[in-house]
Length: 206
Image (cartoon, rainbow, N blue to C red):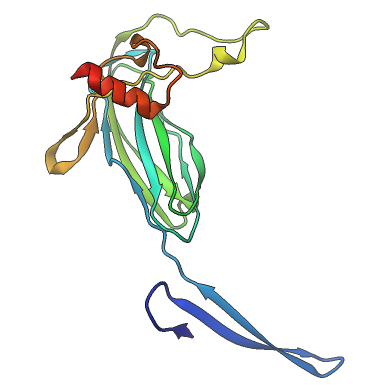
């Protein structure tokens, strides 16, 4: 039976457990609450505005937020060629948000357009589309291979190349992220958070 009133619906059912050996009967009341997930992305579209060279990469940031104050949410993003999301999976506590880094690392020349799916509970409940596009022109030489007995952990670290001029509307009111300058060109940003890097880049490029 569903209980009335405001807020999320509550369900309860009564079952009777019979013990044959002793003829004992025990009443069990099972109850539960139905809570709908409320997860949003800070933007639905990311456009890498500047061409990216082959064997190079560009990064953009998007925030996934859990608007439900009662339920934690598991999310995951499947891999797609030329694009990657870090972290690719995680858990959002009630009311929490997390910053995701979207990387465009082209494997061939030309324009690329894909749709990433941010899945909730492995897609069993819902998925949020994130449209991404970029252009690959030119090459950055041969791909640098990292490894060997002398390699250090920092040699395998992803060097963020994020530059942000601010969101601007496209047709239909969709916002985009324009990448124009590697983050490494700005002194002192490597040890700061992604949010601080974005704010400094806004001030530098305006």
